[in-house]
Amino acid sequence: MKSGAEHTHHAHEGAHGVDREIKGRLKLSAALTAVIFVAELAGGYLFNSLALISDAAHVFMDVLALSLSWFALYISELPPTEKRTYGLHRVEVFVAFINSSVLILLTAFIFYMAYHRLLEPQEVEAYGMTAVAVVGLVVNLAVALWLMRYAHSDLNVKSAYLHVLGDAAASVGVIAGGAVIYFTGWYAVDPLISFAIGAIIMAGSYNIMKESSHILLEGVPRDIDLNAVVEDMKAVAGVGGVHSLHVWSICHSVYALSAHVDIEPLERRRMGEIFNAINETLAQKYHISYTTLQAECSGCDQNDIFRKIAHRERGHNHLH
Image (cartoon, rainbow, N blue to C red; front, side, top):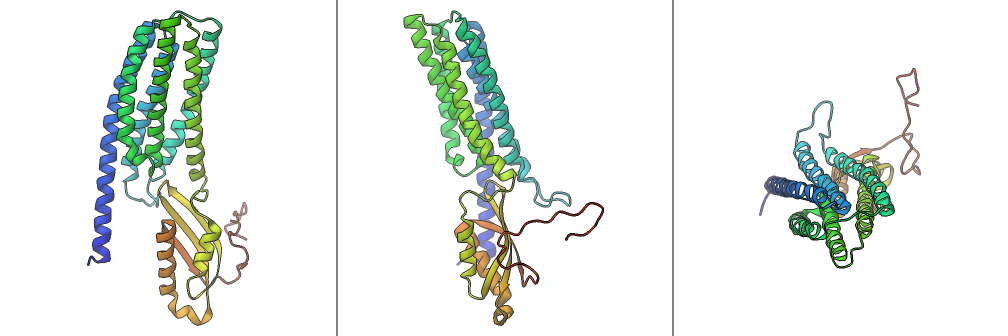
């Protein structure tokens, strides 16, 4: 039977192995996607396709997203310092927020260009447009499958994955548009596809921005019910109440909690055991791995579960 230390050691080794694999996949995906960006940008210019140029712009953001996602994983491994005691874990969340923000601005530009192209449709070379889009679709699907395994558990990888998946969908639209132009000569379909690509970008970007901003603003993780957390903590033998409770995310997969725990008078000699039981419950049921628990808080309102944080008054060095 493995000791706790051996289990922790193997868990850390496993985590580092996963991170190495993710970084390798992100780097290869960025390289492949960069090739598609150049091909679509050149193809859009040569064949006069706004849809292809729009998709190239999206692909460029994919390259940026994949590269920044790799960088975020690298930087998050740096150790804590005196100035950043949590390390740099939130870099990956910040990168996801920046990626989404830039994509929303890019979408606005795509809509602007598509609107003017819709008013004055221009001739598009359908065959070349379709051929480039097919190559882009194949590569994007390969990259999406390459990242899919980790997208559900890593917000940063999820951001990059959605970029690539959205671009794969956009490539399908470009292919369909090329077929329509080839058989019917209806050039207005090119800016219409650009509108559709923009809508795809906007939807994915909004969701990532919403999730990353929730973490940056220290919101409670969406999969955690605070009332359930309180009840489970109070269910531990010897706990009389819980107040001044705060739960937040350090990054997408690391949760933290601080709370004041009222220990029943006759159970105070078991304080360490009680805290261990609380930590085990929080880790197993809610994946909360970092906790700060304070016992016997005199002067606190027992009904103030969340407790408002007081600001320092200007000109004073103490809190009221």
